[in-house]
Length: 105
Image (cartoon, rainbow, N blue to C red; front, top):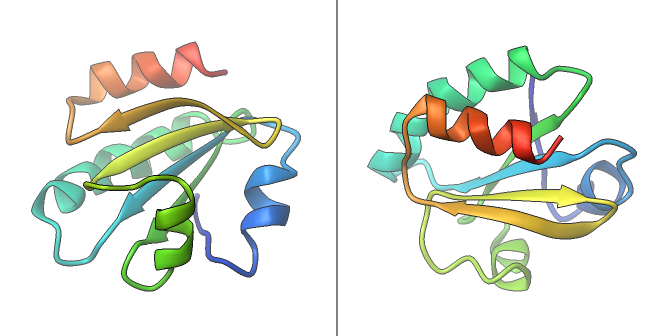
């Protein structure tokens, strides 16, 4: 399941999570973001219970985008213990994204 993160739930859902969290910063108008969406949905299923997966719409929650230095999208950020530990910018194939998930377990 892909969660919807925003300013009101980011602290509790992402920064205070007891498992790693993958956050996809995206926008509805972004072509590469749309390309990554099915890949992210599939990985969310495969890693359910081990990595929490969610999305932040940068148009709706620009404060979060600014806070985490999101300058281009898609921009996918891994958090552990409330800290940024890894980042992927741009669309990449599923095998490469899966390797990132494995690395950040």
